[in-house]
Every structure is written in C-alpha cells, then in structure tokens.
Image 1 (cartoon, rainbow, N blue to C red):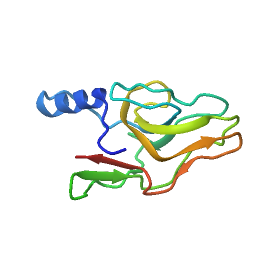
Image 2 (cartoon, rainbow, N blue to C red):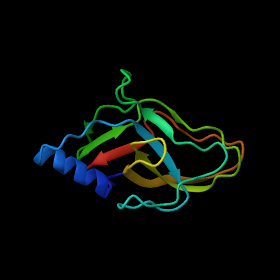
Image 3 (cartoon, helix red, strand yellow):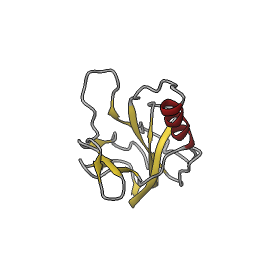
Image 4 (spheres, rainbow, N blue to C red):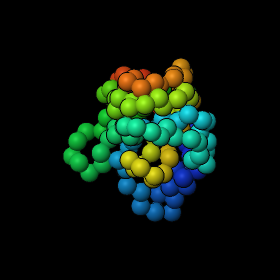
Length: 141
C-alpha cells in the first residue's frame, strides 16, 4: 500500500504527537474495493452476499497484533501482515477487486491506509480471498 495514508490518519497522528490529543491503537480491518481508493477515504467497497471486512488486529483483546514490527526498508519503515488474512467465501460475484484499505471498524469507521493491489482479481461466487503472511505491505516513507 506504499505511503498512502488518509487525511483522517494524518490529522490524528499529527494531533497526537504535537497537540497531545489522545489516539488509541484501533482494531484493524482490511476492506476490498472495486474502484480506486483515495486520500479522502473514498472508493467503492465490495458489497454483497457474505462480504465482511477481515479483522487483522483486535485492540484491547490481549491478543498480539497480527502486523509485524516496523523495519527500516532503506527508504522508510515497512510493516506487513504477520499471519494470513482470509476473507469469507464469496456468496455471489464481488466483481473486479482493484484496491484494499485498512479501517478502524468492521463497518463504516475511518479508512486509515489504502492502496492498489499489485495483482487485481475478479472474485466470483465461491472464491476466497487471502493475503498470505507477509504479502500486505504498508510503508511510511
């Protein structure tokens, strides 16, 4: 997802660091999109039979984050998913998936990071989408 942070997250981080506005690490979910996402938190998220965002980390649950610790990639810092992220099996055709995003809620909520998939994919009824461990990269440049 490269360095694609939404306006929402940019504001939350700068206020947290410089204005002492509390920001609690949220539960994180991955959402799939059939149109391009943008810095404003826009795009057309998949909807339809059995589609739900995939939970990656449940804040406050006592469970370990399912994101690897940030590492210096030589041009910024990079995190990736520590475990497989698997979506529910499509109950109908979801369409041509081009983007994904990280949200702080299972429905609605705030988009935080977004980006274009390296290999977009058509999801048909009966398909299951999975990001294997290490496949979903998020960087801060």
